[in-house]
Amino acid sequence: MALERTLSIIKPDATRRNITGKVNAMLEEAGLRIVAQRRIWMRKHEAEAFYAVHKERPFFNDLVQFMTSGPVVVQVLEADDAVALNRRVMGATNPADADEGTIRHTFAESIEANSVHGSDSVENAAIEIGYFFSGTEIVG
Ligand code: IDP
Ligand code: MG
Picture 1 (tube, rainbow, N blue to C red):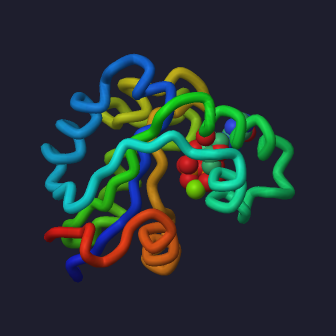
Picture 2: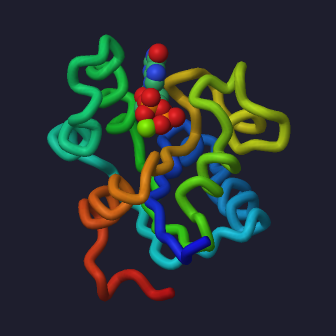
């Protein structure tokens, strides 16, 4: 196991319900360390670029609209095996399929408004972290 970093986003459905602290508590209890964090309101072109891999998917426009519908909290999480660990803590994309005790099972409203984003590979984590943070903003 290697010390890794992954990008996490607390999505607008969670900021709207004022549960960013509850989400952070679940991340921290799982052993993920928040080594950078910033609250932002993404512009349309920023969300489109972030989700560019999904641009051919039928839900792309709705997803961009949702992700720009309110503030989000972008964060860098650090732990051994952080990418896979965060995916386990998040739970399945569709909260109906998410295991009990996961963030999405606990908090998600729908398959779209599912409270958190997490990088899906170490390679994508590096790209996604670089999209939002410079090296000096990450304090391990
Ligand atoms: P992930 O967030 O679990 O990695 P992805 O397949 O990468 O899931 O999808 C990115 C985001 O797009 C999801 O978190 C969710 O917000 C949204 N999404 C995924 N599938 C659907 C869908 O079938 N309908 C509506 N939104 C979806
Ligand atoms: Mg994904």
